[in-house]
Length: 567
Image (spheres, one colour):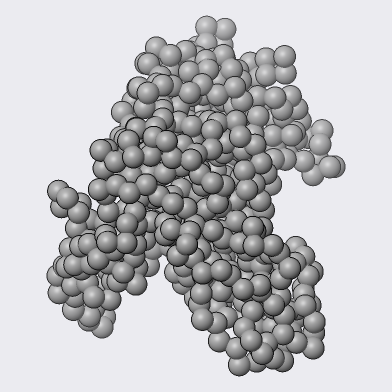
């Protein structure tokens, strides 16, 4: 807290999704002076995934809104607003201006919210990093994988020490308070040291998980490295850290450090002024700096030394970058086109779909299904439940049949993991939902275990509604083992969908239409049936053609005999 001001709390922008780097404040649901209870809706924030509700972290009063509604590209850790604990203290913040200070990356929640009397052992310490020939290392800290996450369990490491890492590689699986989620590495490099072994439970946020290096030769330097139980924003010697004076009052943060919690650190002070371009022309820049430079058409190679650790280029250095080409002339009045700004969600969708088509060997299998039995059963059920205003959709039957077919052919409920294939025990079905901002895929968890079709119907309706209202929480759309995309309601007969990585399959569902088929028992020699065409997109690395065909065979049988889904 600042001298002369009453006790207050800075509420910082947290990581509301594992890949979130910046956010946009869509709206404030409280105004300055309002009383706040813990859990009250404070504001709506757009992430790279969706628009999410951000709740008040504790009871108090909203003294000052620092970032107004509509502000875009707010960096993680930026001060959003000020909370006070007494209504009489609100007036003291009438002219308050934030210094925009952010918490150190990966700072544990306990340290961030430590009371004034907290002992020195709870404060941030520094880690001694082995001296190496490299310019910098990355300390990977446990990030917040859900807004309410306070600690996590390391389920498994998908890479071993010494492995080469590419941006986006699955590094480990972490169990949060919501679900088990994959944690990816955003930087290319090598896994030098795993600090927290698989199976470790109740790991606090900000705890050092592992260490990454950029040069394979530097892996050996960390062979005997042992973490002393602290995490740090920089790797200075402990002696260099000035003793922290006791804080006069609590100043907890709204959320833990941003995710991915990767903290750059310079191994030796002498390297701090090294040029940003490394050996072999490698450019040392943060992921955010690279993305902003690409968006603004800036040439990072023109920045000789960045202001980040080890000369790393960070976002604030872009002001000195030279544009790659002259800016385009302003669009003349009366032009016949409109340029639409990309949302974070749309950019993420584009990146993942391109990655899927470039890295996954797709192939496609189609089959026509007689839907007469499903349509008849659905009509009977909906008529019987008319007074309760409950209706089953065709998609409910499709999701249930998808899950049961995966239990028959588990290879379709798997994913490619570079050195092995992971086969999932539970069938968590993603359902593609179109929103104005883009496509999102909420999950029906354990769909094969939901014996009553009504349970699936209620869950799909709730998820679709939350998706369109931008109310989905991260655990409701991150993950899944197979995806269903249904465009039948638009009259689309058939289409081929792009696989949602790292899944192995996605089912594209077309519309149901009347088709004439031969019938020896009919006077006319034919009869009309309701047919639906579906196409299964498969990752050939995981699902062979014959296996994909077997899956479709089981799927078709379940829909043509829906009574079998009740067994």
